[in-house]
Length: 427
Image 1 (cartoon, rainbow, N blue to C red):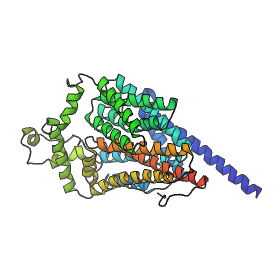
Image 2: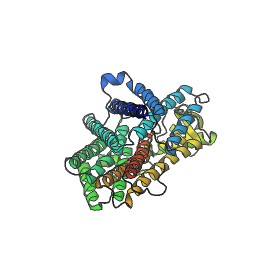
Image 3: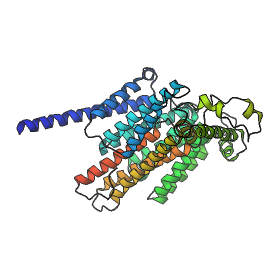
Image 4: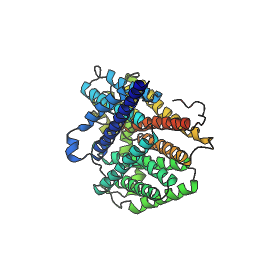
């Protein structure tokens, strides 16, 4: 018996050491991917971390299971199968490699963040990183450090998805952590405004509305939103890069006859035509720009630029039309399923604490904070996705995986407290 106990203890220590190493690798990845230090980014160490994370996840025994992770696997498989059939197989390969990277980190998040201490540590590390990104954008004419935070729309989207974490931190926490959350939220708002991104504004407005509607302290939330709106009006530039004021820039969203709006509608028509020709599996990941000219509509657009120009090489400017054209009906169903299961998962986590009078206050606070933040983050991504080609950005994959981790540590802590789990708590 003594030998067996020693062996079991040794295995536990080994597993814990692997987890600590994996968490450090995860934080390193977030720094490399979001901060992008000039010297280290050139080494492309992110791919090394991605491979290590996937190997560690495969070797782990305590990894959680969820249908949302299965759906992510299926989406990567959908990208993979298109490589030999796509017009541009290299673009399909790059898309598959990108999505495998997102999947690997998402698996790590679902596994490593399944304890509350680690969840807090990694989440707030990421929020502090986003505060740095916001400062970078404010001081660099609305642009981010690079890659998925490179241009103005990318920066605004990233800051909008981070805002609900700051909002709920301000609402739920106390002392210096509340005011740190408020300061970070202010920086994120300023960065979105400074980007002049209309899609970013839509994302931020959608997130703010969601946060207020789901807030248990409506008055406090209303005060926070009023302060954010006042900050927006104060810092809004009088003239942007296009020569417009911020309000003039936003007003163009409602002008459907504007050149940009009409061009988007034209590109969405191209995407629909591509889907009609390839309704099941689409044209392949990353291939819309290479086949757009083939599916241009021949009527309904009177301007010469639409029927005399070959529109190959252009982006579709919509998450949903991008997935529809490049991955067909299968892809759009998988995408919708991931979003649906994400909100079901955070709803189940909330249900676990609703009817638990003996639950510790700090556990109740953290569940409300992180479930609300994860819901708001995905709302922001989906809202911005109506106007931005962000199908291969990692936000949905990461946040849905974090929701899996949240549900698992909630269930684990309730079990340790000998409290009854709500029906249907399994993912």
